[in-house]
Length: 433
Image (cartoon, rainbow, N blue to C red):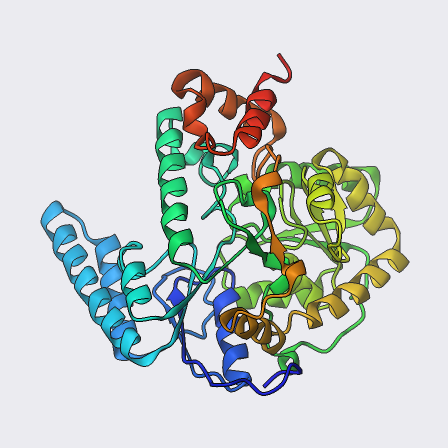
């Protein structure tokens, strides 16, 4: 039940198949809290342990088969576990079809590699797709795709761009609603529902931590918890904190990598502020929203703030210390030297986070499911001209785009049907010589 009134019928919702930063566990909890029967099937085996997934025997079996497939050594065992995993997914799909009315998928993942979407439409199921960034963003401006550790060549980048664009085209044909953010919406051809308009679901409002004052100091504890240190610009963040500490600012960097989410939450309660990442294309990330629950302000770097303002003039900007990547040192210095600013930003962030409590975000998802989408939630991505992406310094993104065009041609951008967007990348590659 929401403030919009009684709904005609209670849909049964299936969410899957992978967790992303606690997003889906919190969304499932919110839907259940507002009286919506919900199954969340998390088949991932990641170190962050967000929890909240279904323990149904088919879900557990699929999770184990997926793990065995990944761990298998030798061609024959790997093929056997791959076949077993696909069989269990088919059983899980059959079970879910019979018991659910709505399917919410995240990170470009469905039961049968998108082939099942036509079946969902045949059975008149409603489908909501959520994109978090790297599942949609062109790989040539995505540090997660082009991380040197991944060892991808320019040819690999071109093939991945083709795969992403093709998958998104297939997903668009089958979705009743698509939730994404415009700055990584280059491959979409239909309007999207704004990722920040529905919100990043946090725990239920009753599970928010008590709002405590910042801990005593000095030193000032600065939390950085990168899921991928390369993508988050961790080397530069360490350098900035160390440089300011050498100047005499009482800063202590607390860096957490690959730890359970419970450890991150403990440190959020103990820190003075958060530095999340250097190259974001959204104004609130999962960690920033999580820090807001504790009333902790955050620094977030990125190249796209002016582009967001151009594309989304009515956006309610979150209370975050946003900066250009070149301005990271100044942003950290501002928070480190101004306790009143930290306190005011933290309190405003907490109020903002309360708007994203799980039950409130769940209500917005139910609106999407029923087709009640306010016009200001809808964003036409045809006007996107953002070329710098995420996880890459501007010079590195430009170099990748330049080499991609030189080796594979402009068609490799997968933007020929959006010539103005394509030309923006061609111009971006030419800049700087």
